[in-house]
Length: 122
View 1 (cartoon, rainbow, N blue to C red):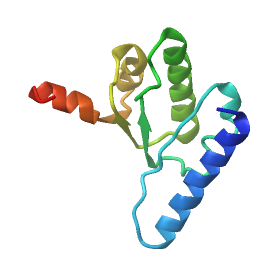
View 2: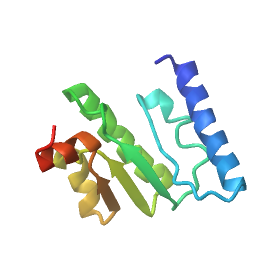
View 3: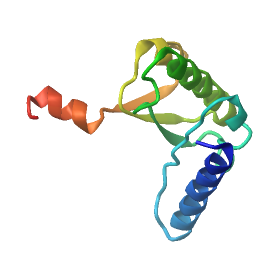
């Protein structure tokens, strides 16, 4: 996705969250990043020490994706220092293990398809 669209989508995410919070809806911000050039804006507007959500869905398919996801995760943890991180989809050890060992609170929510597969329903 072009950088300008990534900036626009981050703005829309924060603007909608702001509107919802102002209208009495509790919001857990979803944090999304790409390459290092997105770090300049992708963590803006999120309160340090808050609870955030992230997703690995479609973000860790190959070695390069995993590298950039892990690098962004570490930058997000450093920048926002969230109290809790809700992770939608898989939490591979090679990406999350060191952060878990540091005592960061992660809550994993399996994706829908994995949940259905475990039940044997297709």
